[in-house]
Length: 440
Ligand code: AMP
Image 1 (tube, rainbow, N blue to C red):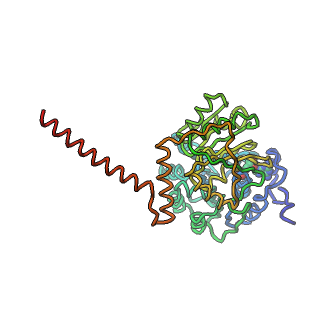
Image 2: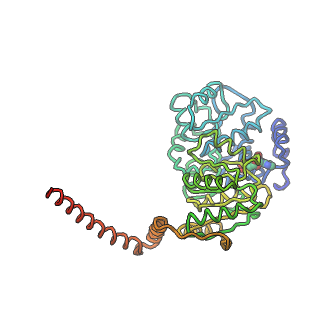
Image 3: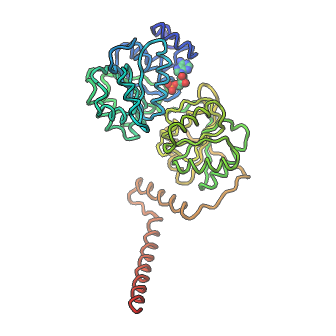
């Protein structure tokens, strides 16, 4: 049978899973599911290159459910590691929905709250653990998790786990799980770090790739505004959000402070309802904000990258990158929030002169230039404050120096000259004060 025409029945899934899939309203397997499920069900290791939104979760969850079939013993037989608690919770939700006609026990573990309820769930008996790497290790070290029974392991969003510095924790987990096991690794991108990890983690893997590396969904209209500074970005954001077609917007910022400042500003201007989510917000606040946004009760969600991972939000009319992401690949993740599931979407990026360097990297990654838009005449272009300008110049110098070690940074030379003279002045001043105090 041609792979394209495969139905869920053709994938040889048991009736209870087909019924659950029916309840979820999936009419046919997504491309990653068509490719990955047969490989995994045949017992092979799998290296999947797929972004969120492709249906990758069910692609690794269904083969696990088929393998485990029903609750058995007390200890976990499958372990799924994911970078953030949002993603962990989302995987748990998908797995529970797919396993609803079975008695399989799925427990999710993540930090940010006391481990007691999670420990109790494990002690009650578990078949599948979904966890962030650190929380898994923490609970393991308390002697609560038995790892000998783990025969299937998944690393989801491996690229993000590497970017977030989880390589050490993952290696520690690999030391405590049985060597003989089936593995699956999913990643949106294929960086060098991910490739090294696949070499350690996977054995003779079969690779399935859904979109070419960092490909950008065709239905997304990408626009870029070159904006001189923060204040002008705020003015432009206000101007855009005054347009009624901006119905469901995610605004991405690079820092928590920017997220707070932007959301406060929009709130004051009555452009909401607005919610802000970032790592400093309590978990309940984050979950509530996301569900309100999903339900359509919130117009603008302001978020940083880390929290955005694992958000399953479709039908977003616009993604606005208030700041260009620090990690180049995050651009693709961010804009993938719009234009999902065949809905046309618009991704708008604001870039200051420093961020244009990151844009050049992004354009290399997505292999296409992003269309430049003119800042509308009605938007006031503010003067860049001295400190903001200096910070940008300093960073630009650093970038140029990295590219060319012989580059003499204009900013640094001046700065040194000024700071030398002001130091001398300071010293003179101090000497003068000493003398005058002695005289007294
Ligand atoms: P994921 O890439 O796993 O985050 O999945 C993205 C979204 O697609 C989730 O809302 C899933 O419930 C949904 N989904 C997964 N598989 C299918 C399918 N075969 N048909 C339609 N939707 C699906």
